[in-house]
Length: 427
Image 1 (cartoon, rainbow, N blue to C red):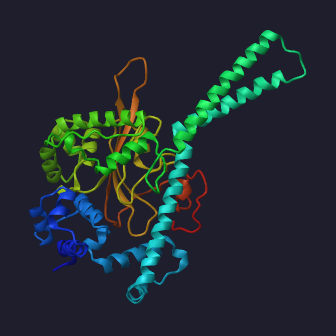
Image 2: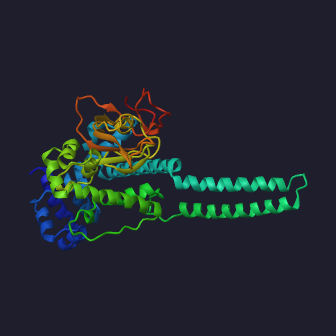
Image 3: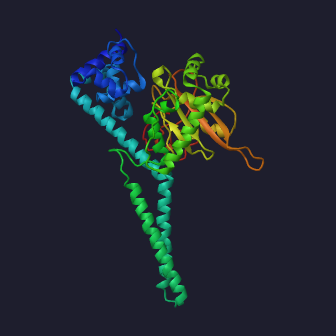
């Protein structure tokens, strides 16, 4: 029996080793015990969100359930070697190394994972400092208050005599500015010290909304009309709650125009082509693309990424998928989403290639559409929607893209704005 057909057996073995009852595990991941029994006897295929949930409850890696522990370890060692080619790891002896030194192999994998986590955190912190409007506003308030106090006090301590009436005004200004400074400082400290999960960083409103949606795989059953109880998420900021409310409003409109069962069946039939789906359901192309991104993968649909940008090119909502994710500032301008701004209402379909060996190829669908009411007295406000789907590497040409110049290894790029921090990389 092929390895992937033994996933259920590995789930059963792992559950038994942990001493967890079948009914208990089924309840934790939200399925019936009888369905889990079918999975464990390899009579039902499993993947996507359910596999990840089972792996999380049993504190293991999903790949170890799908491909077996040895295969997963080998793949992780190869990934670690690919991330640092300058080390000169002997890829031809990976299996020999893992077989003879399993403990050391696990250590290498854990350290590689730790390095990747740290790099991701540095990137997130850099992105936050460069983009977060709340942080920028708080810092501006602190600096402007301090500057105003210094300016008024320098006049009072100067050599020139100051009229009593003007002295009272300056004193009042200093008092009011000092209150502003105290309030802004407290707000800044509270924002930076906001409680967060271990190992995470405080998030902007957009990131907070995306974190909630990502936990739901961007699929909200309570808005699909399937009888799931209404779930009211608790978000940290009012701005995040407002953004999520708008996302849910649009989501509900998409559901009404494209019911899940009908849209899911049509997506399978039409090979997930957003243009054909938009035509069948008489909706806009951007609406069909949004709906594709909310299809659950456990129904057999591919994983779709999604990016929605406003007229300034700022990312409003992003659904990341394996290998794809864009920072909120200094984004590579070669992605089709930015080309769409120059061709409003013109659908764009392009294959793109990240500078990654053996992967990093995606098919992108993008369109810039006007939002809000039309007016004869003002230009239209554009919003770009880009749908992203991973595709297999091939000999066909693809547009070279990156993530951001600072972490892009591609050389000779005509749009590069700053040097890369990577020393060596493929063209």
